[in-house]
Image 1: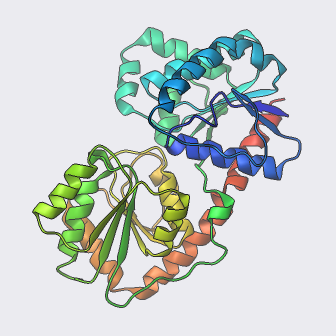
Image 2 (image 1 turned 135 degrees about the vertical axis):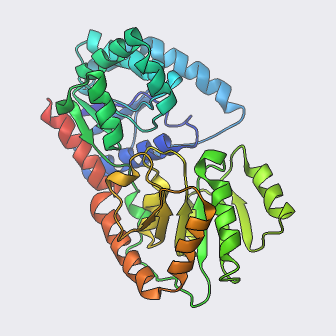
Length: 366
């Protein structure tokens, strides 16, 4: 089975879609000898890796994408299935629906997996019947439409996408990123708290910092590591310095090796985001046995239960502080959550498990 993913594996940018595709490619090439995966530049080999970048290569990437979009109709004729990976936003939808239209015109099977989801863009589609109708016709022509949450599924159905085509699916954690066994990093008098994600306001970074500040009144030895870069990083550092908040470390962008070290050194994952699809970082933290503190946004409520940690509807820092104080007082809770989260990710979210579920849907349509 030849699967074509229209992206540039050697010219991608940091982000959840890139990480998902990297995990999907590696896991399926290792697990299924009948599957061949191609990107814009040709066949992807089993020892290939998805490369992320910034800076001057961005210009080259734009020209390459334009070129491969032009020759896309010719390239897909030798393929069995096209795997599109849009986010519900203006630029992504224009690009991925361009690919979808050519799949329809050439009679090629295709599936799409919605990763990011902008409710602002959804509102624009609500008020633009012509564009909404165009996109929904293309989605209804797909063999499968994968989404990360029931809210997204229900919206597509409301627009007229066939519910029979829509499948709830998860993002993935690479198999070799999941430790075989977890080490219970549980201290008597402190929490080792981690935030891992883009440092922007809508990820709840200020709420996280303020919750930690108040938690220090209860547990002055606790530590908080903020890992990631983003538009708000400099301002957040200034805020921490201005208000003299101790025990906070900023590490910037964390590659896979650094990320794994940070997860091994932490026992609580604090992620009070305003909106999400389904963040890989939560599953990576669960894989390492961290207790999760997050909010009911995006696809998170569709899998999260109280055995994994705490899901807090509020955005008040005090409510997150109360949970942090509760966690530090209950070592047995942390141990139980650690074991449960690790097992859950291995069984449900590993790249090989998710990848094979998606491949099975594709094969069922052939």
